[in-house]
Length: 82
Image 1 (cartoon, rainbow, N blue to C red):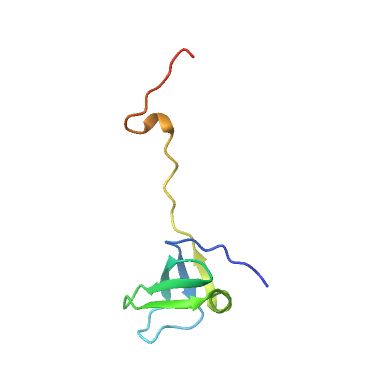
Image 2 (cartoon, rainbow, N blue to C red):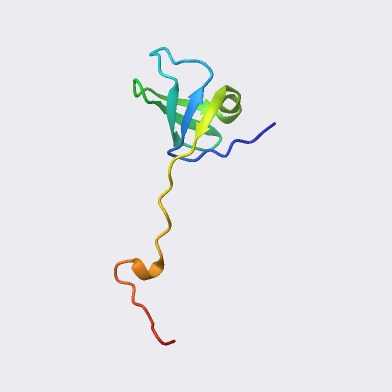
């Protein structure tokens, strides 16, 4: 059994089309069940992880924003010379 590392915000394409004709979904919840929203009709569904793994054709990871350095955060003070 293969494991799919899916994160909130990722896009997935299933093997079969949804009743509305859409084939792409956005992940909105992860855990034992995967929460998905159809990008065509905005329908929300919950799917067991094992069924999700079988139905996924393509996984499109979301673009994660870069980690902000502590020095660039508001209120952070630099300590030059130490």
